[in-house]
Amino acid sequence: MVVFKKIAFLSFSVLFINSSSAQGIGKKLKINPFRYEIEKNLAGNNGAVVCAHPLAAQVGVDILRQGGNAIDAAIATQLVLAVVYPGAGNIGGGGFMVARMSDGKTIALDFRETAPAAATEDMYINKKTGKANANLSQNGHLAAGVPGTVAGIFASMKYAKLPFKTLIQPAIDIAEKGFVLSEREANNLDSTKKAFDRNNTTLPVFIKKKGWWKAGDTLIQKDLANTLKRIRDQGAKGFYEGETAKLIVNEMERGAGIITLNDLKNYKAKERVAIAFDYKGYQIITMPPPSSGGILIDQMLKMLEQRPLAAYGFLTAKSVQLITEVERRAYADRAEHLGDPDFYKVPIKGMVNPTYLTDRMADYDSTKASKSSDVKAGMIKESEQTTHMSIIDKDGNCVSLTTTLNGSYGSKTVVGGAGFLLNNEMDDFSAQAGVPNMYGAIGGVANAIAPGKRMLSSMSPTIVLKDGKPFMVVGTPGGTTIITSVLQSIIDVVDYGMNAKDAVNKPKFHHQWQPDEIYVENDFPQDVRQQLQAMGYKIVERGAWSRTEMIKVIGGKKFEAAADTRGDDSVAGY
Ligand code: DON
Image (tube, rainbow, N blue to C red; front, side):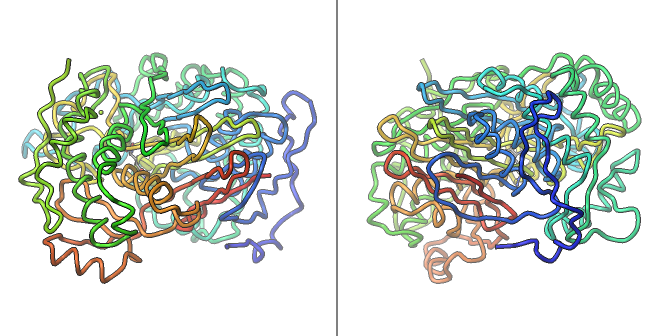
């Protein structure tokens, strides 16, 4: 556990943020942005928030204590993350929320970014070389899709209980008065300094004027606070129209970007029908296209369900090989068939058809590796830097919400005068058929760029029910690895009987069809690597990629909440 004792002396005084100052109710949130602790695990009865930063988790739980529900907490937590976790928390990006309310209602909210109206299918292809220029889809103004986060927040307000002003005020206060940086955040900001230099037209607050950031430094974000105030006072129009919209468009004009006032005004979050299916007596509720996550998790669990996964053992060569073969086949389908369902007819029913999935595994051989070059997407006949939060409240309302700028600090471009980072989500489109994006994912027509279209995502916020009651809330960042991390978290609990802490922190592995290799985290067992190599698999060790946040309900009411040890992620609850 990281405790900020070392920086306690920097603290001016305990700052009690007045969450209701805007309405004068006067309830105090006991949040001290100059001194906070990371908590990795907790057991609770009433409510919990697990997310990427302790301050955001604490604000979320304070909202629950004030009588807010899980949706209120998600909104407040998301807004604080936009301030204290600039690498991924955002108002300049987008995301997905899956919620399950205590009255049985399921919500799948899509606030994914869209391609601007001036976007074209070949906009990143260099006319001379004929090749896609990844720098343009990943960095700077042209990489940004039209942001969806603020529209998503207001679309979810209809399920909230507390006034919006109460939910946004903690974020405003922390932006205005500042918070202390953790060592990890200071290092991340410093290592992005050159990229910030290259991709901005005004000096962003994330570049320290003199020297380097260090743990305990205070980050004050006045421009961001003013943008948040406009959103507080004018609602979604405070972002998509008026002053903020003008600042975004001015930034685009200075940096040769293409987002216009109309793009912003026309953006809409959309409620979708969640993917819901049974796995071994559990009901899984997860995100439909434009996420690829829900369908792939459905496909993979169904391919696994008929096989004795638990008997194969946890992280044995046999179980890892089986899961890898299932992942390979599902990701081949992803590349071919998944995209924005408003633009491309995604064959959802066909992809999860039981006969289709049985056929898909017909050539599986438990003694040796298949070759991705032999595994093509199935022919389907039919009659698609990020951060996650998992929340539960005292009534059993659950929210699983993943939101993203795509890469760490997104496009690295801050909207001058508005203080927030723009996403680089355009890179999640297939910039050129068969050319990998920053996560190595390839795609074709289904995920080609088109004006107003949403780029395919892997974000997989998921809720698992048992006997119709909440059993697990789970999700993670990690690009294409999101889907396999969520898959493995579900298997670890359902098939291997793990507690939340182990399911979150045990080593993960990942196969995504192309490239034809198994990525393993550093602590993946050596003997299993060797056995897999002997079966013909290429093993590639990569740094830790998952930052899973999980709440697991035990015996109907109590729960355990676990924040990933791979980051500053933290739990709060009561
Ligand atoms: O939507 C997606 O699939 C990606 N933009 C997610 C990026 C991500 O998870 C980065 N975090 N590590």
